[in-house]
Image 1 (cartoon, rainbow, N blue to C red):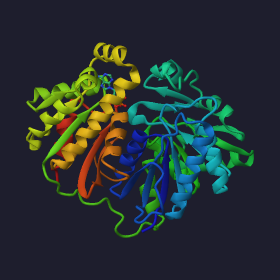
Image 2: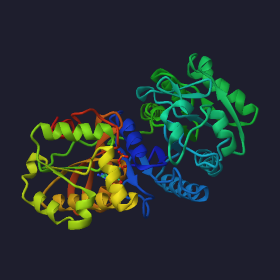
Image 3: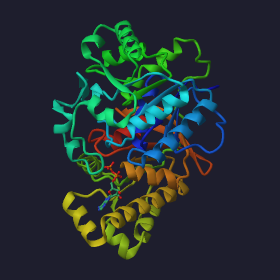
Image 4: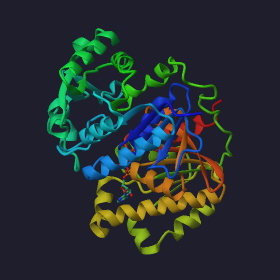
Length: 423
Ligand code: ADP
């Protein structure tokens, strides 16, 4: 089988989100963590490569994205998608525009679109302006983001300093007329040498029309949502072969392990809800880890019945987090927790755990790294943007649910584990 659509994502949980939405189509989607080593042995029709280049220096971001493109082309892909955050997280230097331009150059593409809209999650674009819920981007909490503060809501103005080519807009009035009107407007703009086109979208129907209009573009760019219609559209071309369906959910042993390193409000509510339901839990404190090491947590985990899905959590409220950071430094407090959860996940696997639920973006990176996971096959969605993923760790088939910060509802841990037994 060869790849139909090759996707490059600028961070890890963004890649999981995209892979989950593509897999809604019921087709086989594979997620690779970092640039894969060597040629693809068994490419899936839909491949997503998770890079970590959102805030990397521009040269690094461009080089890694181009290497990912080459790998996807070697796997057979002729259509490509560049995925960034639905809040267009970037600085005036990049990396959204420079990566798009480099990928277009390599593909010989004259034009691409920019559509970070994700209506299901409240991200919409009107007259080129991005909204987060009812707030313009620049009035949303994103204005204070520590790395990529977004101080303008206008996507054309944000994009212009990032690219050398001309920037234009297909507005909602055109999008509302459907795929053919969008296609005609893109052609008209191409006639004026407009290479970078922001496209308005406020609803899923808009995204369907946009994806259809852009079906033949070598490169599309955006948030995850505009890619969602692509599997079905590409299937219409007849290029999708037999065996391209999502694999059956494997039957895995019931032993499970839940690790939570996220301190977001939703994750803390999820931890509370899981413990309130009578599940066994062990709280990690960075200060204890610094003083006593990981021994007590290992001893506790070793004594647990893994069919009860024991939870180890460092999730704490802001005051506790601040106290730990004041005592140990922000980086040291974070690393102590991430390293401990990663080591405990490996111990759980060695003790027989085959189902893992992990909360936290950075925490997910640490745990998958320690489990030696490079490729994940995407399964059923648990919550929007959070699918079950299947992979191999030290010879064992395992399932992983990787959840970033505020995703999911309060019963997420419980619900995720139950979902795995649905047939
Ligand atoms: P999220 O997806 O919610 O941002 P992450 O895992 O990406 O979660 O980030 C949470 C960070 O906070 C991690 O680096 C983690 O190690 C750190 N952390 C977790 N618990 C604590 C704590 N009690 N004190 C200090 N830092 C913590």
